[in-house]
Image (cartoon, rainbow, N blue to C red):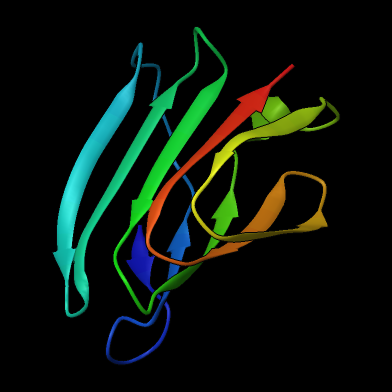
Length: 98
């Protein structure tokens, strides 16, 4: 996760496992707490955003060419291309790769 614009209103999220069985973490941004959890064994990505924040979400390269479903959305989700989405609004977002 990285802050993409000053003030933390826009983020970039692109989890990398580095061979680990899962990746999970939280960080505090100027706008609040952000949480990310990637579980490659279940092909599931969860992202939690605070208010007034949007994010570009890029699922791992292993998801390329696979069907990606949005199984939970607290706000707006836009499919940009391939494995890249934008999300906006406070709450939890869950992506399931099939």
